Image 1: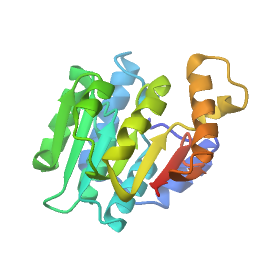
Image 2: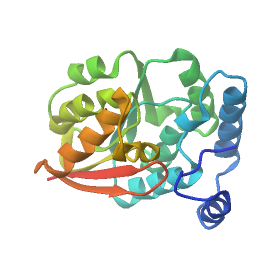
Image 3: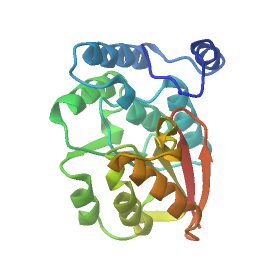
Image 4: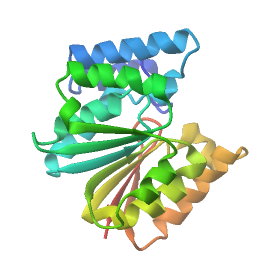
Length: 220
């Protein structure tokens, strides 16, 4: 079972997927293995993007001509799989995560897809890894899908490390609708982030109702 947008009925979610690029065997097997991990209580299925979001990210990576990308929050590697497939042969994706077990699953599927040479995984606190990178324009695309209270800090560190017109995709920015009535720290972090981004002149901002909300930023 794959995650679907809370905005869609199961029937509409099936229709969306049937009308989008179909996952190949590698992606389908990774989705199935992650779902089985969730059933055993080893992970949460909601932490994995849906295949239609992955297809969008792959298409966008190709359409923008991205050469260097960065991902904050890798989980079992589906989003990285799609982004890496959108890169040219000499492109690269840097993945930041803290969980060795989940990313070990990711690495198996990247190898199976023949993408290991395009993807570098760095384990550790993402904010520390980001701060250790040269503060110069490097990345054409970034995907942020990690701890919600850390989003604002991640974006601050990403900004100087992005090329002009670079695009950032920020996941879960509708947060199952809880942005309208935030109670938890995560709820408030997302609601406050959304309000700050649309007022931040450094970014061109649009919040898209894809999956659980996907905010697209362009560095001005």
